[in-house]
Image (cartoon, rainbow, N blue to C red; front, top):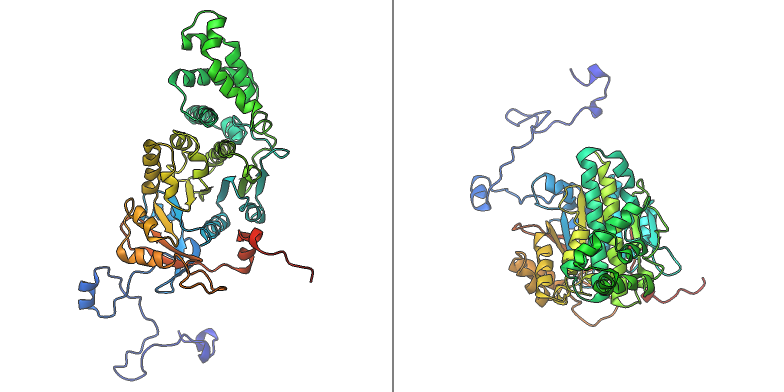
Length: 481
């Protein structure tokens, strides 16, 4: 059948390939070539026009390859499904000002566009709020005169608990209880500055169970304190005392530490019912704690731990009703070390509170400036656990950094000499001339396992430039006109 037979003009017919002469290879259709993969030392001997493997395109478009100009896409969940990575954790590290948060914001923008959900707990700088609101999400602001957050709030998983049956319901209830206990322990560690002894941990768990059973809705910290002071069974048996006087002496330190959460700097913030509720249909949620950024480190750390626990419950609740293969939930932990360096043992406690990325439905982004943040942790055990977080991440996104920083990182993950030279070349401008663009701005090296890294250049759209801007406070105010 020719073009005339179907009513097409000759100009509309598919263009033929080859020369219109005998032996010219004239053909109207050319089959796709066969793909052969192998080392260049072998493949080039068979076919001299071999090319390197292309960068992955599927996923959120994060820029172009700096050497080949190919578009590069990143989707940790899809990379996991295809066997490219073993976990969906993403470690983002680089100097301040090179665009780490811009990279993360591009990622959560794309993942939400694909149908996923973004959760930003403990936004210390308040920098994710404009983006979350632009995505149709909700921003809750924690602080004095603002919203309060009950550390024992179970409302994010309540609907999932009602819908679950059998073993799923029991597992979700146990997860909620374990997270509540871990969070209470972590808050007391922050207040006291040292880990709790075993007896106090058992007392705390028993008092929490008593307070939970006595309430129709969620208990609050004063309920746990009242249950501890009342001393009903099994509390006296845990401390092995006889009589109310001996019991009160045994629980004095625990009572005073718990009361400090109600009477100290966090009064009105974590000692009453939450003044907001999670929206299970929101495409993005952020909990802004920037109002507490000027407080002491322990106050900010306690607030961050509470927001992490609440956000983890939000993720649990959203995952419970999601079908298999649904788009992932992206969780962003920025300024992670602001909380973990306050007291020994918080790395383990935070891991128990936020243990989500082991599930395939979660993509976690952990953002930091330097591995010196790990060195600043209180104990060697904490530092070892923190180094494990880096090593277990499925992907590393490295921005410009000094050679010393990269050498420390190479002790945890494989980075070649060529990759090191590239990353360190982005670390600072070559001269003191003002007005030049920082050489590392928007440039990242994506590493996964032993593979050669992908050097990517990210260019923001005008809309993104306004939403992702973290330097507003440093710019002079614009006059009228």
